[in-house]
Structure formats: structure tokens, C-alpha cells
Length: 184
Image 1: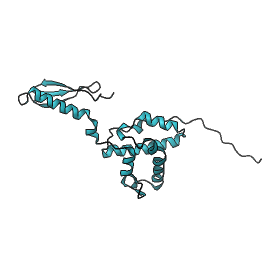
Image 2 (image 1 turned 45 degrees about the vertical axis):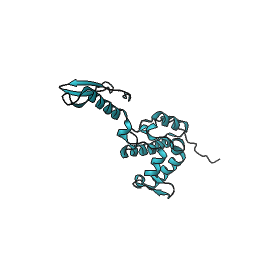
Image 3 (image 1 turned 90 degrees about the vertical axis):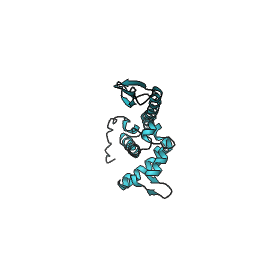
Image 4 (image 1 turned 45 degrees about the horizontal axis):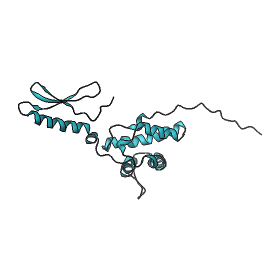
């Protein structure tokens, strides 16, 4: 269960200190704001508001969000120079070739203008399902997007989780028997 990010928190006094307390699922974490003897109630309320604003604003933690296309071109591939960047340099040439192709033809036309923190698992899954791909191709497309989104998390560009990671793909269909050619 995710925490709603519009909570104000509550101000409490415990053991001679001001605390802000908020709800996260079934838990009620708290944070000390300072001693009661050193802060007035209005100062403690101001500190509570500042703490909750920082907590509620997930971009403070994750960094500023970019579009998928901007992130791809900044860290993976320079379209103008036709040059592979740092994040692709450690991959095999065949993987680099496939990733560039899949990004150019599949992901960037559909999701390139979207902010990274606005991408959702349901949207990615619905788009993959609409392509009517065989399972192995869909797995490869998801893996490439997941790799890029994992890099965005690691580099602090607006994501706190990888939505492509949770995309479920359909099971393999029944095996089609191969027609064995005859002499005719």
C-alpha cells in the first residue's frame, strides 16, 4: 500500500521533545523536531510543515524528472553524432544495435515525450500487449526499457521505482507443429 502524499502529519510531544508523526500503510513513523524548552508551538508547527513538505514531495528524494527521450539521448545515445554514450558502452554490439532500434521504433515514439516519473506499469503493459508480439520479443522489449529506467533510478532522474519491472507478459501459446516438407 502506498502512502498518500497529501498528508499534513500531526504534532506530538513525547519525552520533552516535539515530534511530527505521519501514516505510511499500517505504520506511524515519527521524526524529532527539537526540545519543547527550545521551540514554541508555532515554531514546531512550522518545522512540521517543512518536514511534511519535504516528505510529500517525492522529487526532493528522486531528483528532477526528465522525459524518456531526453534521458535516452543524454546517457545512452547521441543521435546527432551517431555515438554510443557511457550507459551503452559496456554492452555487446548486438545488444547496442537492438536497443537503439527498439528505442527508435517502439518506445520513443510512444513514451518519449513522457516524464519518467509519470510512466506507469499498466500503460507499459497495455502498449506491449497492443503490439501483438511473440513472448520472446516482448520480453526483450521490456528488458531494454527496464534497463533504461533502472539507470534513471541509479542516476537520480525522477524515478523511485521501475514500472517496467512489474509488467506481466502472457504465457507462451501452444506450440505450433512444424510442417515437414515432403517430396511433392
